[in-house]
Length: 191
Length: 174
Image (cartoon, rainbow over the protein chains, first blue to last red):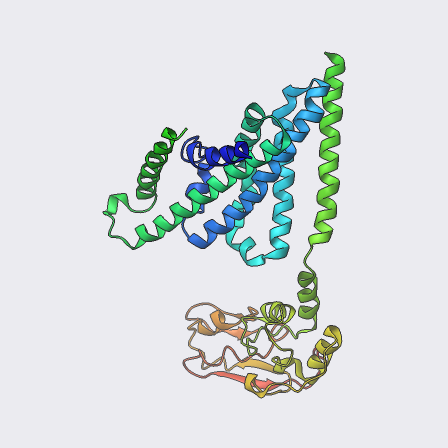
């Protein structure tokens, strides 16, 4: 149990995928403009990440390794992730057409979110056991969602602030993302 | 190695097939009934795009009915027959048209008194079905086949040169 908690804490804070591994920066910058969108995107990514981590771990352990075709891991994982994302899109469109409209192109783009593939690959390197891999994926997703929500809340405030003209828009977002990353580096001292 | 290569092809194909089948089933499970429902409702609406129902056009009104956001008695051009058709489709009781959304009129056709037209193009922009042709500072005219008689071109006309005439034959969709 403490093992799982440790994995969670590590993936959410210490090894946060966005701010420490610098994976998944595209949705991080792209959908963080509004808090509501960020929450929706966080939820969708959480679903995809957790599922992708669990499924790709199982496929790797019980299909690819026994057959000696680990070298196809990358292709198979991309296939699995694309499938799960498609599934999520169908699900979101059914349950919340509004969220589907708001997320727009970023929903199918979860496929190319390198955080998802990164988590799938890293969880194989770092984990033993399906449960650990699932928790690892879930933790990574929570970390992703946390940072996305924090950052979008911050950007909503920045929009109101009097930013010097050359820094307006993406520039100030990049700078504040850098500061956030610095702040999260501080968690590195915990472990 | 050759054996390994063949296994790889097999496994990837099998996984792809499996995902395809799951997605195929998921697609049919998750297809929203509302989509097809609003399309069915849309077919019953008169397609005047007159916006009297309070929605920008017939399809948005159909979506609203499908999502239970609007009642079925907000479409004056459809008339009582339209309400009856909608009630039949949705299994609801037939109700009277809501007079708040306008009254039932016979099928109308807009006609521009062409010698008075100053070519301001305002009615062209107002027309929801693009049934008015013309260019700036040139006379405009109405394509009779396309006109739905929605009256939306009347208010913008600065010289009030558009008349609505009643069409003799009433074979318009109810």
